[in-house]
Length: 482
Image (cartoon, rainbow, N blue to C red; front, side, top):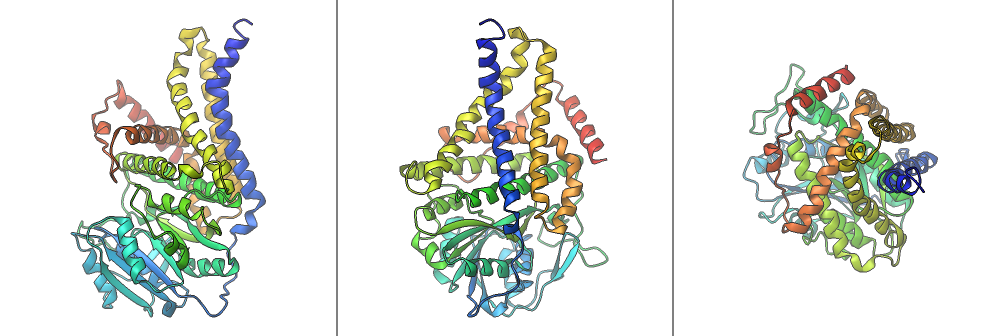
């Protein structure tokens, strides 16, 4: 067939066009699905049908002296009746001042100024009229800590939240309304927002620096840290506003976020709480619930704020853990693949294909594409192809953001406007994260399970001309942040 026949189609079709089409097509389809169902993301009217259910909030905490105060403060600011709320903090073997901070709230002497700021909105913590308890869980990990709380809680609805999560004041009320409106709903995940304002200056002992207005002093970020925080905000924005939302609309939700998940008490008891058989206990719990009748979904009305990961090293460890957890959870539940509900018949096989089979094709493509001139392709054509691929990924990101714009809270839009300046750099960030995930695949095959991941190779990595490349990227980021 000649050079522009079979060989051309094989090279460009298999190694470039097919992986590209899979990524772009899925992103655009999810964006269209969410856009057509945007009304489902609107806040529920502030009505709760009596009798109002009791809500238990379980917070595992290990060395969280800086974060736990802010988390509890956000719970004390909830609009849901406090007498219907019980907070159970499970101290998972902390060696810092976590226990002291929690006891301060229990005794009525909060750790610092008693209010928080979200999107430059000051939220005062009210006097808490509910029940707050500190439990000792040893140092056995998050699953055991959650299960300790489950043994002591009395709520009809159970929130499991990370100690660094900050809830918007309407979060609990919105979750209760959702569960009352849908009797078939057994579990849900919240909408997570990466909020760089939660990075604040502190003295290292859990004391936050306050300005003249008695508000936390924001941490000064370098250009690279600013880029990393902004990229994570956009990534989470797309992953939840589009990704989780589309999964829920198709009844294919894969993971109830560990940062904030809501369960009916009987559902969490039916699966025996969290199990420590994978490093991703939230995904394991989600897939276990998918075996039972009832609906598992995403609630965009329940908005939770998290601080961004501050360094590439920490981001690497996080994404390797996530990738390991995904593979381990799929291995645990392999017996259901292709059977039963839609998620087993279609969603999980498609996820394996996209994240793993096609993922390794992209890995080959990354290293092969620069070699095409040695195979007879014109360098100009290769550069044009790379520019086209880069542009298509930016276009897909822009389409997802546009689809989700109308269902965002006004405060979230303000952050998004500032973040849009970094949109042209997002494919670079995604490429780095992609390599982290591939590393997670390899580590899963070669290392025993563990919560943390070694990132020593990042410190040892030396790239010829790396200093110039880093400087160029820094200047490029400054230009776009402008």
